[in-house]
Image (cartoon, rainbow, N blue to C red; front, side):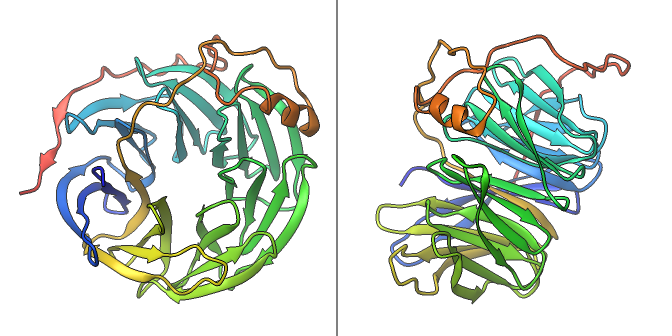
Length: 361
């Protein structure tokens, strides 16, 4: 198996990296680096083929080069906590914050290509469609917004009854999940309407589509629950940690799924799960104790660069049906580098710095 790294951010302002050694029955995670990344707790983390980014309540995004194991510098544009980060392909990063902005960054020169006033309140979560053409965002203004990443404009806005704090596309991109407190709603892309609803016993803190039909859900308790998206039923539940589970992530192996969980108890755990019709509880592959209160989690696995179309077709789709039709035309696109909107030049931007991350022996 190719190199795999567990990445986590903590309340104690530290970012952790653990290199995973895989075995037939047991996996071990060895410390690769620790870095005092921020001056406040780490609130979000994301990984691409080469870079890892962390966002914090200190209003900065720190960029790390995983190949060189060096800090690449800080991105300074948001005015408030960085609430969500997500890469699409290896070329762009999206960030959302408490300032209501959704920012699009180029990873080539780490420039802010667009800054969009996405929500009247905080941006609480965002998710990029597998095609790279759409993004969803939710915020504290009780709206779910769809963004056309080709034009950089809002496609449509849907009012929801409460403030949602998580939104995620399915791997196939034909549905998406929206979380409101303890309630999970599945939306159909073509109709833009709720196709199913299920309630978790506790407030949902994190979720991950393991495939297009199984969703892993973590809440403010020790358990992780698996939901059959088609039937909207809980099909498996297991105790993952001693305290509440803060984050989940996953990757597919040849014949099984590896589910990774992180908790306030300081542990990151790796679980082996066979995604078959009758789901059994996963078996523990390995674990590592960070001795920190973990807030967020990501997996880094280098892979060949994905091919991106150089030409972005013009799109003025404004309805869900039109967007479905537009998505069927091409697999992936490159976002256009339009002028920055709502650029805040009142604050001087700090120069990027390059410094070595502390290596753990």
